[in-house]
Image (cartoon, rainbow, N blue to C red; front, side, top):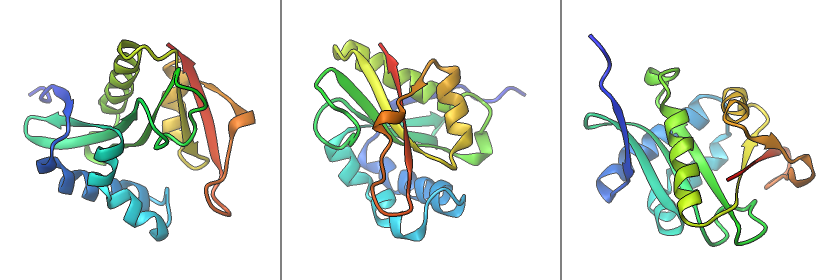
Length: 163
């Protein structure tokens, strides 16, 4: 039996609790972020108010999410109105390797291009090796001059891709 096709949609309030649970589980329980980041990871309604929140669904099940930032300061790494960003990309471990992360990223790229953006930028943690491999496979390159630390002992790497 083949897996159900995954589709990407704008997230609604009915998705927020599942996205929050998934995001905290992947980032904190997965060792990618410390407990101190949990409130921000769980604040899905806050993300949705500052970004276009996308959800990946396999039938009715939420299997991934990402916050696409087309304007404002939520991207934290954008330096001009020509840049878009995405944050808090998360994929359910049960479906890893099935293209969900790739679909979320390519959807962000397409929507940013349609919005007239010229470049996508993102920051990722030094421990997020699978994400870094995905970004590189999708044509992102490092921008080490824009690496940053939001808090002491947390170093973020910046990647970009022209649209």
